[in-house]
Amino acid sequence: MSNRRSAPGTQRITDEQITELVSKLQQLLPELRNHRSNKASASKVLQETCNYVRSLHKEVDDLSDRLSRLLSTVDDDGPQASIIRSLIN
Amino acid sequence: MSPSQQPTSLNNPAYLKNQFAHRFIRALNNLHHTKTPPHHNYKMYNRSTRVKIAANTAMASVVGSRRAWSRAVLWKIRKLRSRKRVNCHHQEKVSLKRRNPKPKTEDFNNPFGDSSQESKLRELVPGGETLDAVCLMGETANYIKCLVAQVEVMKTLVDLYNPT
Image (cartoon, rainbow over all chains, first blue to last red; front, side, top):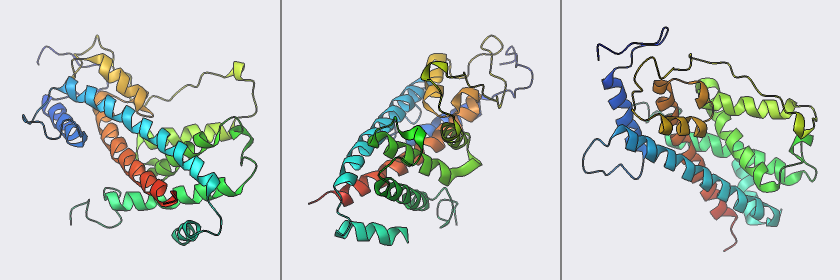
């Protein structure tokens, strides 16, 4: 660790900081949350994080698509519309 | 009371979902009731994309300026709205203000040991290009929490609108 040179203006990143952040991230990932060993490697966590964010983006795309289709079929006087209206007000 | 239990804290997922739902529904209502697109720059987007933009904008506006990712999203939207009608061929390259100097890999060991995954993550998280490794992790964690909340609310809305 002592032979690591820091770039000027940046803090030295400690290993504890990294492991703490990695484990925090790991808690959020559905794939790795129930991992038998508490610590997955940092690169595995990063990889799972990328995959998870991509899948969430895809879900948003898919749900937006369905919502846009449903929006056009909604009857303005139907029960759903009044629920929505009460939610807005 | 821990931060996630406080009723109005952004760390409370229920509050986050509530705030997002409020803004998103309002935006959907506007989308639904205007026959012509609200802004001429949105004409090129189909309805589905407009819904997606409304959702991402609503979520980013709940978080506001507290996070780099939400600032990046809001900035992009603002840029989109204020852009004069230009020919697609002449889009200028946007210069980003760097929050921290971009870490040079020659100067110190990459803390993750694998820089390709890190650069992929930077592409996925809005505003990630200008953050250093530590900030990037924190931003990603918050971004994921907000995305999850956004997806849950959108699913609930789809169920609500679905004729059964």
